[in-house]
Image (cartoon, rainbow, N blue to C red; front, side, top):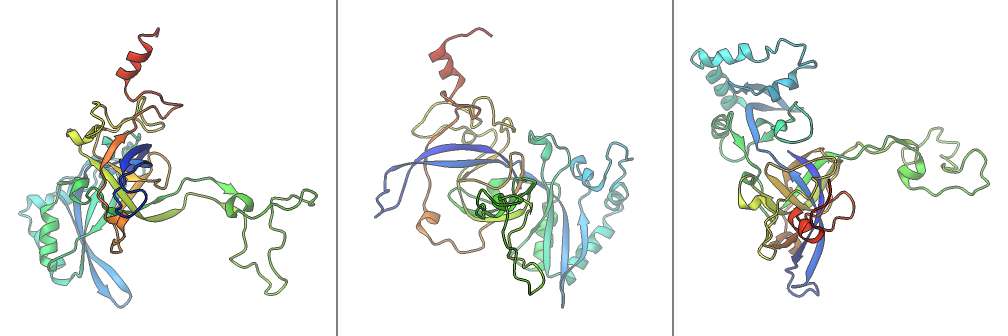
Length: 340
């Protein structure tokens, strides 16, 4: 899970032998997602039934952060904050009950998933309650999956342990909400002539007399945006690690020492301090939106999917207005000192 920070643009040389674009410079829009490491706090096992998967049981870690405990309360500040205090005693009693639960998962379950949560306090979105998700563990026997998941308890999983640069991934998120909209905005139908009685931003005929109901395919007014959407085939251009040289926006062609955050910060977001991911094109949702990232479900065989990306330049000019300068030092050299 990552958080959408904003957009910028990059320059790169296209590697497509035989294409007119081969070795030519391309300017492309990219989205930055901030990806603080996720924490593994539990295991859940599923058994197969004639009606699909059914959860058999779950095992939680001994120590849980307040970020994840907030998920179990409606009013955290009013509560006694006693969640998982009794559960933690199972570990102090020789772990017998925990081990028996793990053995039950090994014996009966067909699918094993870990429960992971984001470290939302490390991101500047003004939220304290973590986002949680289940991540399936694949490969090996059920016993090996359970042992692997149990070994990850209370440990962090960074983004570069799952994804690599130049890889194709899918993004899952909720689109930007636009409230209630009419048919012209929502479905793109044509406006009626100017002289139309009782309004012209409408659908003139919503169907025949019979069948005596409105078909689902007729454009109607209603909720626009804030819909759950999955977008496939997003290419990763770069993964930056916090505290590492890769976190900077410096490239082999642009040796300027500059941070990945543009001048003045990302509008409505702020400064990127944790690991981040640079993805080609747009990503669904507004700033600060939580985006779920997953491996591509289809085999990637196209040339654009297999192309190794090498960035020449990452733009860090201000995104609040017409940014002219890449760094504050450059601005100081050109404009000189100014009155506050």
